[in-house]
Length: 329
Image (cartoon, rainbow, N blue to C red; front, side, top):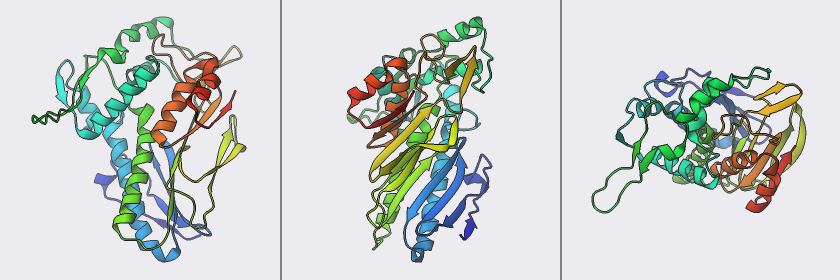
């Protein structure tokens, strides 16, 4: 397996990630790189003769992923996320991409009766889901609750009535937005969409297939060149080398969420990393792992999160969606 390291200018790699690696297995190319605290992969089903085109595709995918990571990460400086928080208590214009993410978050908040809330990321200041039994003091959690609540934000969509006024956001002082709950799935959809567009614009004359996998959030363009399905494994919680299910994917997306890596264990009780924004405490009786299939990764990720937030009612909620799902209690 010939491995090729791809170099990037520092401006394209602000987080200083290791060089991405492009290789070829028996019959398809594999791009591997790091982003968003996850291992990322792009599987490119094209013949060896298309290596030059594959490298262009790989560079596009990496640059776009790193761009999204830097733009919305709360751990980066000088980015869009930081600028949003430097102008509290005033209306500020949003670019089109950020406006779309805000609109998606607003819809998710409404669908979840307020359980899916991008302002609840501030609870990370007192919660550390590191597998230990260390809980924050109740007073610490209570002190953060006044700073949580999507309904406390104000935002206005862009207007197209001749004024061309951009979308705007009003973020109250001391409140914070955390795009981590939707950013990775959004990046999966963007990379897949841009990759397909690049291949179509380059007038490619052979069949191709793409699969994007960012830490278990997955989307594909269609079946393999040989018409076979992509094979995707769901890992067993606590036993990541063992497969709970082997799925076949020919279209659409999958997203998985659970407590296999982020949890607390106290007095024999396991607590998921998902927090109830109304109380500031972990969701009780959450499933160990949920995987959902949907047309896009953003949709899959949202339904997976909403199901986990239902606690013991996850299965009933998933059945109502009509989507395919896999649940491990």
